[in-house]
Image 1 (cartoon, chains in turn purple, brown):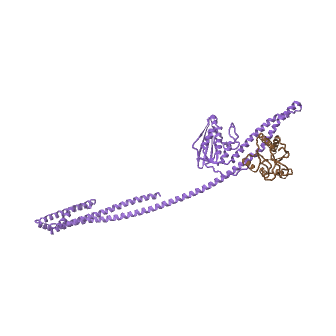
Image 2 (tube, chains in turn red, brown; image 1 turned 90 degrees about the horizontal axis):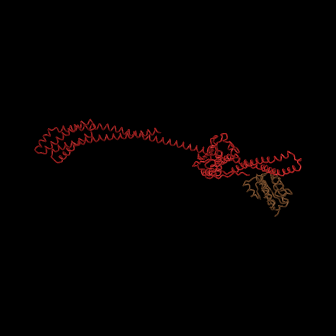
Image 3 (cartoon, chains in turn green, cyan; image 1 turned 90 degrees about the vertical axis):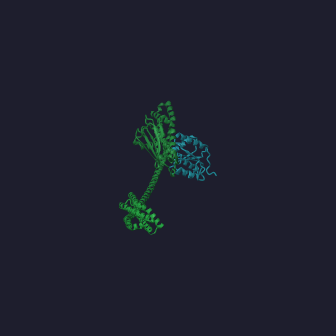
Length: 483
Length: 146
């Protein structure tokens, strides 16, 4: 293609060059015509002078005199014109000198004749002079020189005409080749453009197909995921619900049992007082151990009650209808920070919010719960001896928004990165209150929002929790879960 | 409901719950007879077919659990409330569920009272005793009264 354009450029240059050369040739041909014209003009003037002179000898009238004067006046100019025009031609230069000399002699002799004739006394002498004068010879030589010069110009004309014809045909050939090149290059351009356009269209089609396939795959996966999620929610609900019933019994009858301690102890005391021999030692001990046993049962059932309630809350949260709306993440994070301000001041920790934060359309409540859980966790597990610093940022990556909650706290061992998201699982030194529910809750909520959450951390190096969510949450009609 | 003729029919699959409910109702001073059924089928059979059951004999008050092994308490509630003779019989739904939709559904079907069983026993005992006090003052219509 580039070669085509280069060739076209060369052809254009060649066209210009040959057109100018052709023009130069034409000018030279014209020049030759001018020279021959000038020679002819001179010849005519010389012939007129001679005619006037002879006419005047025969009859002294004004017409002959006027012709004579005119020719005499113009002849030097005519000669100089030839000299000027042929100055470039060495072959003509000598001839011009010759011509000038002959012409001057001719003029001189003509002047002599006319002046003698004007005087009646000398008229006869003039006529006699004319007889002996080499006037014929002078004219003959004049004609010969002019003819010679003209012949040279005619030969030159032939040569120049031929050259002009050649350069004209060269110009035509060059123009023809240029035109052909233009057509070829244009054709090439059209072909290449067509090919590119076709390629572009084809890849666009392919891209569309791929995209459609991808969307289908994503839709399938989403359906599977939400079905799995629904199933887990249902399972959690049933389990927690059905665990509650026996717990009511355990707690209820424990209370009933506890209520018997008072009367039984009173009875034992009475027996002790009235008839100590009836009081068995092991009965007394059993009675004394009863409160402790009941306390253990109570503690355990209370804990179980809390756990079941947590699962129930989790499952209820999972069944809540999501309400997607534009959420100002920076404002939301600021609210969470303000709510924690007292604790932060107490701990000497700070929360930095990197603005601007990416725009997102999601469920506000779920987002708030996720973020406050993550931020609270970060404030909970600070590294001893290092002022806590928590950085919250949100950026857009394609169709997703990636939210980072990064802290400089005590970190999470890599082996626990997945475990911490499991229900009732915790990591590291157990010096903080908690049931191991927060991150499980966070992960469940993230899944519901169509997102994923992961942890990146080294022990002692702080932790970054990365939440990736769709930029616009789409809710699908969900089947209700019956109680 | 001071008359002994008003039967309390308790449909509760959990024996322990049934016992705890009975204990606490008695503590509230209710001395009416309590018939206990652990599944829906036998409860329905008693309600509709037994010669001494509510349909054929005398007024009754029903304590109904929703989670039953053979059917949902909702089914029993629907049957009671669509029966000409039993529809005025007061039904107290006493269950562990506190799902809003479920509560609404029961009232829509004609349940008279809905009580969620508290897990914490003190609250449970208190709630049942208060129910007992409530039962002692309400009027139960005669079955078949026009």
